[in-house]
Length: 425
Image 1 (cartoon, rainbow, N blue to C red):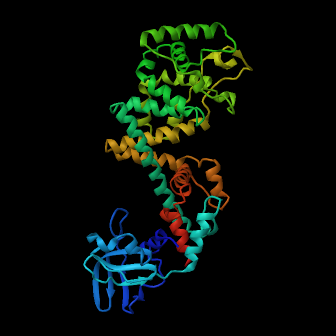
Image 2: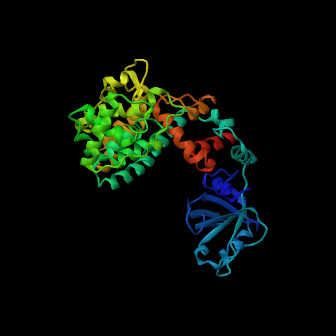
Image 3: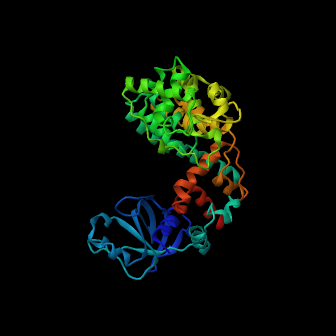
């Protein structure tokens, strides 16, 4: 038995009856469990109970054993003088406040199946940990909770974007640029792309945007990927010469080539190819943000991301190394990654910060319109019979895993709460 579990049972009124006897034989009726306090002081504020014929309002303290009251030093702390009820699993002794007043106590009674389910969730190695009774949760209720967790994830991302806004002194275009570049190549090279966007400002890039070759040279040269080449050709030599000119003009020091990864990546996702595609996107960056904000429908956004690398990359994946001909375009799956992880969170915080709810509403609407993502997290839930209707729900599952499943915080998860309630129905 844990104190956290007992607090959960009390907070959610999962005890077997609102009427019981105190350890002294007094009749006790629980009228209101109060508000849980997660800071210092009593566990629950503003509870209301009837003890005998007297209705009392005040605080409630919960322990595994009554003797924990003294082990925690509450008998010396005046902050606990307004406790009207001690709730315990084991009433091994009487408790008193700092004035010597004896505090009424009850032993918390609950269905043993709750504890059994909690122990199962904490120990099972399979996710979601609540899978044993997950199908008993009402689907309509599940949909509502998914929406809440998707918004919670958006709000968490807003915190990350706020850091970027602070770094850029509220330059929305710079923030948008950093978000796009951060997710331009998925997870493998995400940090390298984020560094590039942080250190090579969009203003320097768009100063070259009158010519695609110059933008390519700037991005590839700054990335460090024009050095230490396996082979060279006239194009790569020209790229490097152009970058050296730009580097001298802007006082640039290139990134380390070792920052970029090629292992276990399909050639179409090589950082060199992604940077060539990014160069094409930067040719239209001057109007990109306003176009995204004005877009009403997702296909408009996908069209804005419809970029193709220059002709050289039709026959190359790495600079100087010829390959079978294939036109390099940004595929729909990568566009979806960018929309979900960069554009939608940006829209959401843009609406929040500027108090224009239409952008927040549009962000959520677009998540609902996109198909659910397929990954190991979503597959774990679909195996348990939970059908996913949209990216809003798959994003919710990522939030649940990160904040609750991985941390074994089943008692803090609303879906876990629904499972607990279903167990004792």
